[in-house]
Image (cartoon, rainbow, N blue to C red):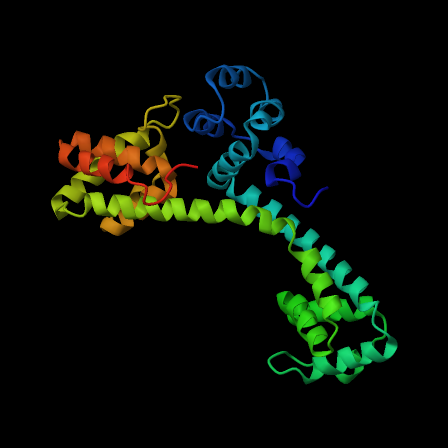
Length: 303
């Protein structure tokens, strides 16, 4: 399994077997233009959830590229949180095993004398729990690594690099860095772009809604309720998306909390949801303000 595989590709078999309620996922994929109506209708006719998932992943999702898989992943987080958590746990366990293997291979390049120095420096390092004297007598690098994982948990990799730096074995430090970064860096730009996009949407909505009175804010939140009730709609209108907002939270939220909830549950579609709500309130002035603000090249609001 390649390290740079997308989460959806990496866990294709598990997703096909374990996603049971696929209808809301299909609805949202259609709504966000990841799949088209023809594919949507074809998948809906299949008899089982497993067949539907297999057709979805091998068909329209495959052709939609990284963006489509990213959207699908976001929808899975909302609809299958326990499954995603379990798959991430599996990833973490695999990553830990891989990291331990890399450290073992690295420490195997130390001479017996250097390995003793490595263990002594670990014992001398402040800020980390100390090995017992008996534990420090271990001679196999594999046992040493297992002991470090047990003692220092997630800090064991950083501790290893730190001690190797103290030993002036920067070649081994670099090896660990080269093998532990790689593909993670490739995904970071898209993540940063998404965070910036969501921050921009929040700023945009707060600016547009800042003049609403307390009574108007209450009315604004009430206009979102019809969106919430269209649970099984396959409509592409903005009303469908807001069904995910939990109104027990929304009713108690202030202006900033309301905007954050909308962005959390509606994403970039929050802008269109807000426009629809303001139109219902006959606040066309704020609709225009929102349109004018969103047209500025302040930050890119679309992927």
